[in-house]
Amino acid sequence: MTTQTETFETFMDQQPVQPTYRVIHPLYDTPEVKRSVDGLGPIQLSRGGRAALVALRFYLLAVMLMGGYRVVTLAHHLKH
Image (cartoon, rainbow, N blue to C red; front, side, top):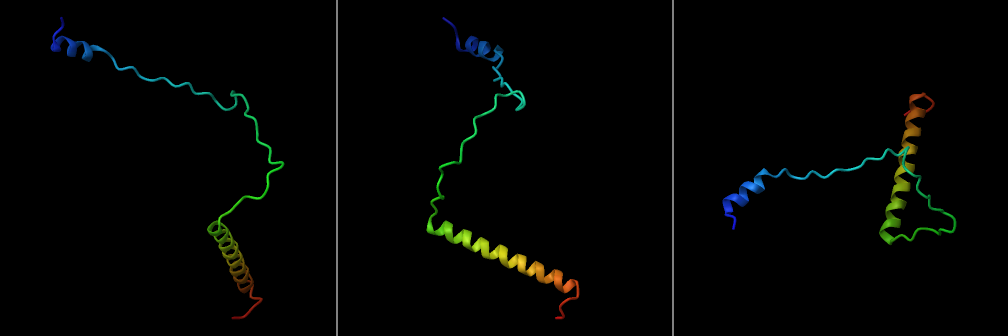
C-alpha cells in the first residue's frame, strides 16, 4: 500500500501533458464549398430591424447632403 506522500511525490514528478494543435495554412487546405444564393428570398426583418435600416438610410442621405453642401460652399459657388 502506498502512502499519501509517495502518491503526491509521484504526481509531482509527472510532467503535465501539453495539448498540441495542428495548424494548416489556408493555401494548403482543401477549399470549402460555397453556398449558392440562388433561390433565396428577402430577409425576414422585425419591425425594429426594418426601422433601424430606414433610419440608417436617412442618416447616410443626410450626411451625403451635408458633405455635398460643404464642398459647394468651399468652392465658393454658394454664399452663406
